[in-house]
Image 1 (spheres, rainbow, N blue to C red):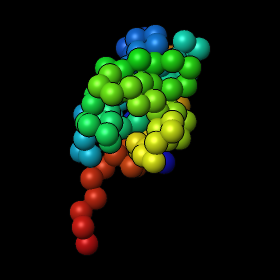
Image 2 (cartoon, rainbow, N blue to C red; image 1 turned 90 degrees about the horizontal axis):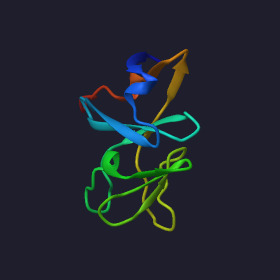
Image 3 (cartoon, rainbow, N blue to C red; image 1 turned 30 degrees about the horizontal axis):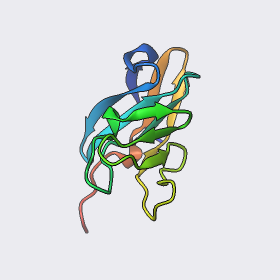
Length: 109
């Protein structure tokens, strides 16, 4: 894994999200009420809603456009045949790190 320091945990609002831009598109960092941090695609596969603007509850986020609920552990949409990519995150002290190995665009060979 190739870890990237994203910032201080307080840079992500409690029960909220922060969006970062990567070569593969936007990734949302979600912070739960228990200070757990998850990373997933910021784009809902249903209508392209910005998940970073959704409601974080438990270990899930609800899309602000059409209320699809995604499990932040797996990326799976509850009751739907759809999912979003998720990314490994770790907390070291008060710093948030994301595994950058999946965030680098790969060329088609």
